[in-house]
Every structure is written in C-alpha cells, then in structure tokens.
Image 1 (cartoon, rainbow, N blue to C red):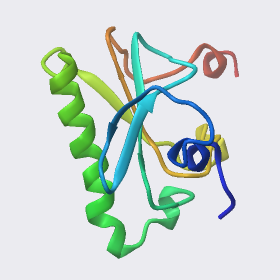
Image 2: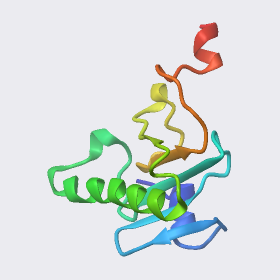
Image 3: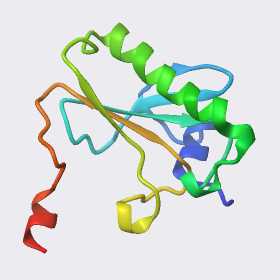
Length: 121
C-alpha cells in the first residue's frame, strides 16, 4: 500500500489537529467536518479497506471503536449520542485507502443517512 495522507499525518510530514495517540491508533479532527464534532480514528497499521482486515486485525479494529468511545466521553458528547462510520470502497465514499473510523456528533442525525446528492439520484 502506498503512502496516504494518513501515513503523512502519522509521520508528522503534514500537520493535523491530533486529539489522541497510542501505540495502535491516532485520532485527529477531520479537515472537512460534516458535523459540529467530526474526527477520525485510524490504525497505525496500514490496512486499505475493511475487505483487507484479517483475522489478526480483529482486536485492532475493536480498539478503534474503544478510542471513539473514550474520546466521546472525554469530549462530553457520549450521553447525547454520536455516529460512527467506516466506509469501504469508492462507491461507499471512501477517499483515503487506509481504514478510518469517522466519529460525528453535536447535532441530531436522521436515518437513513441520505445526503442531498443521493436524493437527487
């Protein structure tokens, strides 16, 4: 897998608003937020898509969700609720091919999560 923008953020080659880091993961604010609170949690291990997650990666992917919950509590929006999203592939909206968990909060979300673009299709 080639270097992605996330690899460059992990290596501190480009700046990011990093809000959490441990030996397995990194969390930082999204540069194009879709909600009042929008950050990403990524594994430090390069995994392109959910389809590339292997059996040995199960705990790592679970760790991403643990980090999301920890930060939701620390940032004060856990009780109000939040959405987590992990897109898989281009048709699902994945633009960076390094798995990443979107955490969105700070407003009510509807269901299904249609966008205006989808409604027009």
